[in-house]
Length: 257
Image: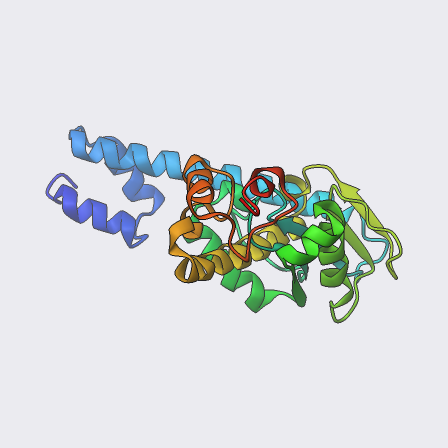
């Protein structure tokens, strides 16, 4: 084994050409480079096991809401309640029981690359999904909480087929044609809510990127409409754009200056 170069060993790990016998031999290799590779491998295995445990816990939590084995469970979540500009976006999704996407969790805990990859995989494998957007003008008319509820309800009732139960991240939604359950920190507990959070956030982030092309002075692609220092400075110089939420206090003071 010592005759193999560290680069070759590294490539074997990358190509998943490592079995138990080979791993045992590598653990006895005292070269610092090999020890580092094995240590990284062990750390990744621990991370994978941890992610699998968390994933199984989310499915276990969700399955407790099934009254029948074939019940359809929808998760719904939103993105964009806090920003000063852009829409609030809600997504609802029904996943098949054999759906598996290890590492799926609250979209805010994922990297942009992970969110984009998961976004496509969720859409491809979902039984049904729908994404609803409520723009800033409607937000100003209704207020952000009611606009968020409106987006969530729209996302849920457009699912085909309709679910047997909807799991909602914290916000109560009455008057739906199926029972619902509010789940505090739902995107950490439910795999369907976590999937919905990815669909909502990626959709909204991409919308903000497009708005940045139209209004580059606000740098929407960098802060996605949140009230960062750079965003507030741009507001003070340029005033609000047509995408800003004029009922929000930090924006309101720059209207009709």
